[in-house]
Image 1 (spheres, rainbow, N blue to C red):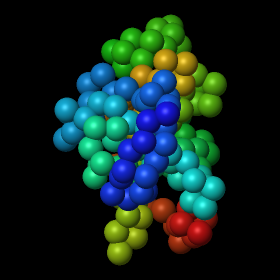
Image 2 (cartoon, helix red, strand yellow; image 1 turned 90 degrees about the vertical axis):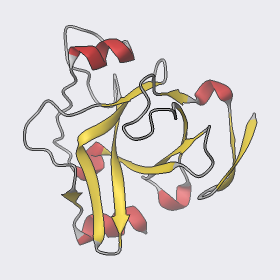
Image 3 (cartoon, rainbow, N blue to C red; image 1 turned 180 degrees about the vertical axis):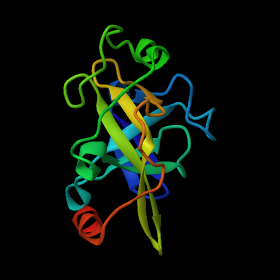
Image 4 (cartoon, one colour; image 1 turned 90 degrees about the horizontal axis):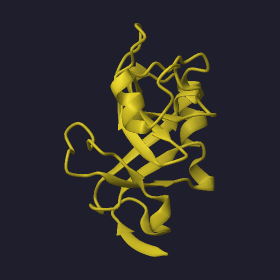
Amino acid sequence: MQALETKLLGEIQYDESAVIEFPRGLPGFDDRRRFVAVRLDRTDPLIFLQSAEDAGLCFTTLPVQAVDPQYRLSLSGEDRELLDLPAMRQPVIGRDALCLAVLSIRETGTTANLLAPVVVNPRNLRAVQAVAQEPGYSHQHVLTAAEEVAVCS
């Protein structure tokens, strides 16, 4: 087990084999490619993507289906290839891929990025932040008060 002292979560323990790799990095953080998914009982269903390379970098995420149960994942062929997902069909959330919306938490409210979710292949732990191919998704989907209470309680 590895130990990492983080800015937000304190000390976390993780297994090196559980590190999620972003081969292309994340937009704005191209040089940060290794993250640990941290789930805490007290903040469930939130998933924190903590950088294994930068103790101060942590993204708060939520499974997209917790925000939009009808969310339709549609990846480009390039993204499916990078993640080593089947080329002939779109991945199914929960079976083929974990799909996370990055949250932006401000005093004025919380928004979820449904336009560019983080998509993880759970079999090889490769991930990408993929721009949705389906129209109608926003990078600032406003969470309702009920959703925020459910997420933050």
